[in-house]
Length: 108
Length: 117
Image (cartoon, rainbow over all chains, first blue to last red; front, side):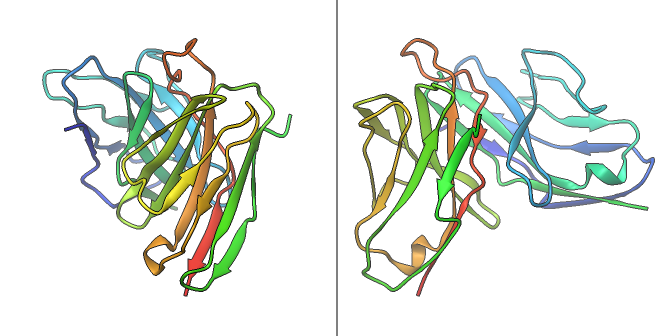
């Protein structure tokens, strides 16, 4: 079955500390993976996708097919990074499955 | 462009009542979908559509109906609301892959918070 697992419901770090939001997936096909972010009082929006291999707002994510993971990383967290983060898996173009989400709280 | 517009933003229903959540997009996206967001469960796909006249079920379709008569609109109907349908509902659209689904980049509405008493 297709599944996206985000093991941490809440992640709290200090400003300037590194942050890693974990995401593991289960999918037998070739995965397309995404990270979405929802800032307070804003719409859910795309942060980055694995095929782009780009860094957005200092965040990067590498697809590891061997470990079936797509962890989101940032070397130095900022207070404005506090938000809800969702990992998502696109299965063949018709369905996008989301994980349960991780709330990141960056403390001053 | 307004993007994806959902109405109403808030709604309170009594058990057994019916209602329709409206969703409209002005980006000419062929793919549209409805999700519900519940604490600890993330977003779960209810129904989706790859174009006008074509709809299909997602992960949690029971209790919900959809139709897609135009490219712009994708309403979600609750025929007989139940307390288990208390949730925040999100509509999302995506550029088409020519009938092969969506590109994976979903554009979301602001959400509709529904409470069923």
